[in-house]
Image (cartoon, rainbow, N blue to C red; front, side, top):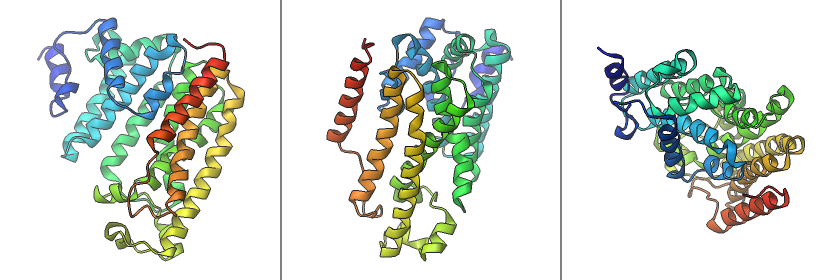
Length: 313
């Protein structure tokens, strides 16, 4: 089997749009593929990175594309055995991107190699994200807050560190502050999506919190809200908000333009927690959402901050 054929077969079973092309794309074609993927998904990561300097945006498009495809290989493939095989193949492609980049065929890795080369990106951060997607295939419940922190170490924290790294900030002190923000954002999404996750067979509310507040697991799928359930969610929200605000100090130690983006991420997390609070912590009656008006205010605030930095483009 030729190298081209092998590359084609590696992702068989993946969503069709993610299959490896027969011909190796040019760097320009690969970056365009990543840009189109990023722009077609209205998600906080892509929107927030618009406020970064234009010269680094292609790097964030390639990082986003790597994360998006890996996430979909795990979540959009029904058979967990196939999903794990695809994630392993994606990991092999990542190693190839670092070790023998001239053999990379997939547009994500053709584009990502340029980011790796220009920014000297640590392989570990990308590998950690892939580890989290593999965890999702085998672990569906969490027993404690510490278990959630361990999961977030792989699933969320690498994203913040990648942002800092591309922008030239590589100290561990800033990385640890970023970790707090990213973990808190992950947890905020968990508290927002309690019912949706339960319907997918997942529970991120730690079992020890449920025991401590006298909450039964059947209440989630049955959508049975009680004062005890509300008190439990409130305690998780309070703890998450404190972490988010502690980590927010990272914005005081970076340039103004990057601070605008980091603040937009953090404010988005605050908005989710505010939405949960506004529902009196009853996340069982419906998913708390950030209204379009609130999103526009967040974006407007970020735009004003970018303009004040004197670097609007």
